[in-house]
Amino acid sequence: MRTTLFDLQAMKQAGRRIVMLTAYDFPSARLAERAGVPIVLVGDSLGMVVYGHDTTLPVTLDDMIRHAAAVVRGTSHAFVVADLPFLTYATEADAMTAARRMMQQAGVQAVKLEGGAPIVPIVRRLTELGVPVMGHLGLTPQAQHTLGLRVQARQAAEARRLLADARALEDAGTFALVLELVPAPLAEAVSRRLRIPVIGIGAGAGCDGQVQVWHDVLGLYDGKSPRHARRYADIGTAIETALRQYVDEVQSGAFPTPAHSARMDKDELDRALGED
Image (cartoon, rainbow, N blue to C red; front, side, top):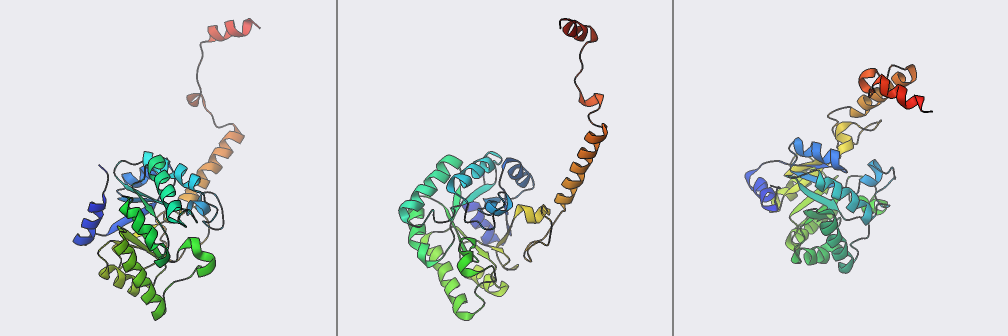
């Protein structure tokens, strides 16, 4: 049985930290679920970590549906949330079409939208129609060209606006809120003031839960991870080492061995070749 909205709310009320992790395909979803991750996010970050773009902006709704469907097939217990990509929820009509397709074709349990006051009417309409919506404030990557890739809401006026947006999203019906790159004391204050779970990324330990990107957690890319990420393994190096061994063994003739090859009765082979 899948995790539900009621389960997530109960976790907040009980003070149980909520874990969310991104996944973008069937095998990563299966591994996340086997590890006990209760919320799997199919993020539009796939534009960068899967497709190699510099931003999330090129990601299309079809891209998201394709990846989200694979993640749903790879899970049976996790609550699956998918981002609606850039400008697919610019109007209520757009949002309803995008959410309908995401839930019907991909089978996700909820969608995530970035932004504050301007999208509150859209969030309210979606939730009125039965679409579970997760909000996202702070650094919203779809708006990175206007916000910049930096910590948000450090000044009092910005912090007050973020808190007002958070309350407005809660009132509009969001079941949870992601805070990205927000000062830890502010994120903790928002978490305490909202009834819904607040999940942080680069927002300190005072949130109700945390979300991280699959590739950051597993060290799948070279170079320094973002400050807010923690690398729990260096899988990228392990994969490269394995692939180098594969290359070496094929080139040297060490692979494949007879154990990796199919056999054929010699008489059958002779009869087959003798017909030429």
